[in-house]
Length: 512
Image 1 (cartoon, rainbow, N blue to C red):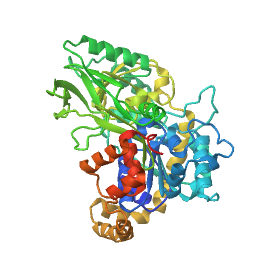
Image 2: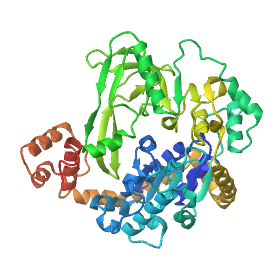
Image 3: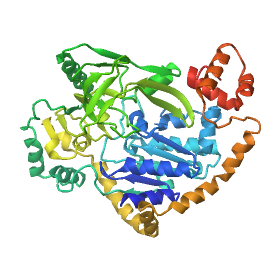
Image 4: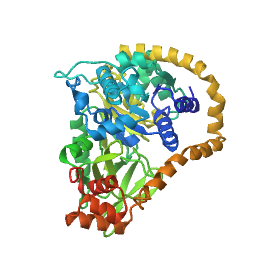
């Protein structure tokens, strides 16, 4: 299925699974869908199974969103103890996105479903009537079953999967690898359970190739101990002074710790001239993206911010950026740090979702099916892949993943026919011929405009951007003991707005 048809099906309001091989643009489609839905006035909750994946989309983990945490089952009376804020978020959510769905246990998807039904008081509808969009690839890393936890499998085995009966949007157009490249052939063979001896030999040949002298490529390893060892050793080899950047945080410690587990930027970033680094967040100005590799070529005077020359030729002064842990519209924690990490080596798990220009990959310690596929699919072609070694496990995919994929492909073909009526509209949207729809959306938002106008009769600055002078008045007044009501009247803003702004400045626990 092409991206534009998948997008149109999602915009039609269908709950769906967005899937397909690595590099087919699942995240791209999601971002388009999220943006268009928000523009249409929909409340979109963006989540993922891992914190790292969530930060790629600017959301939170599904465990945090639903309030289930690491629980294996919902405690008795759970619905009665859901916080007011979480309840409000779940109640007003129109669309729920869950990315990297391959890593979510079946029973946890059922738990999220149960939470939504109970909170929204619509127990007969999957997820309480929310449009649910699942995204991911079951050939990638599976759910992790730990010895002390409840065992589970892929979400297709959940009760709610059968009730939801999502449309299957199987993307098949490759944007990462070239159609004529040997690597794409190998990856396709792995997915089809048709890996031949010549494919293995082609991979093994890459162990005989060494990257060009001085090449600033990234190494992928299967275990953290190897990654840390390599990065520390390579940094120590560089001459010159170290420049150290400490993270800055807001929010309570438990939320900060939760967020830090999902942020690739380290607590303490230590750099030198010549350090190989990787951007760990997309640049709004599009000078680099998450996964872009470059070298530290200078440090800016006064600030000591690192100046990085990326492989695309862009030279960028890297300033601190911010990651947020959000519960719907409420910010729980934030971390500010230079959006870089040392990039001589990273783990395969951390590389999921990235595209690397070139990489040296060590798969001798691969320990789970799908790990090799994730690692190999990070690069665009075989010429930019250098293998240290590979074991049998690295070439394996789970039997269950094969069975699931076969079923999904069959269903996707049926759904493509079912929604064929949407193809003309999809083509028009791709060609930019749906401008009138934006006008309709604007008309539809007139009710919201009226609501804002009504609120400004009482709070003149409601929904207006905060300016520096108002922020200073707010902070000074709060520190001097002024009440929320007093600050609300002084600044012409709703009590809730005052609370949220104070929480932004002083942390979530500063104001209740």
